[in-house]
Image 1 (cartoon, one colour):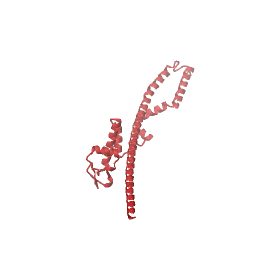
Image 2 (cartoon, one colour):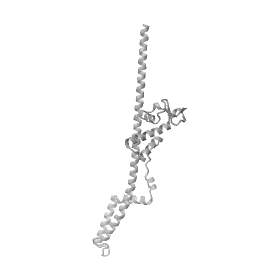
Image 3 (cartoon, rainbow, N blue to C red):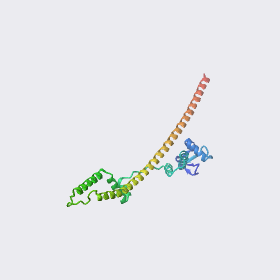
Image 4 (cartoon, rainbow, N blue to C red):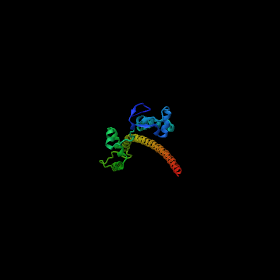
Length: 234
């Protein structure tokens, strides 16, 4: 068991990290916050996660200024080791989440923006005009030229269709906005994690190089001793 230098709680050895093993930038941040920590101090994993999230928040504030709720959610997910991505909803789940009016507006907007609607409505106009021009209704025209009733019908359809399509587009824009926010959070978290990995790898390589230099120096000293001892024996 080891004692966490930050919280003062006893933790298992595998849950404690020596402060000397922490990567340089995070190590400097911890030193600024807790300058009284000894060199052989150990920090628990939970306390290290809190310090790491605080370090990321401080770094982001220095780079992009004041943080929004999106950035804070990313920082919390890193601290809690949680996923930011969400499972995409299926069409059935989306339909259940919408009200009857929303589903109806989607269907009307989908039908009104299709070639099927254009062809059907174009055929209706041709038939209407021919019937009234040829006066096939017992020799009388229900809507004689200039087709005032048809113009009124078209105006009513346009007046009703426009807000219905706008409702569907507004909901789609809201869905796209949420997706863009989620993509931003995922990209930000990926960038922060990649930066953390780069720093960690650089720290490991630096420590490895220092150990190799120490081993090489020890081997050189040992070789010099062997040569010196062999020379004295001769």
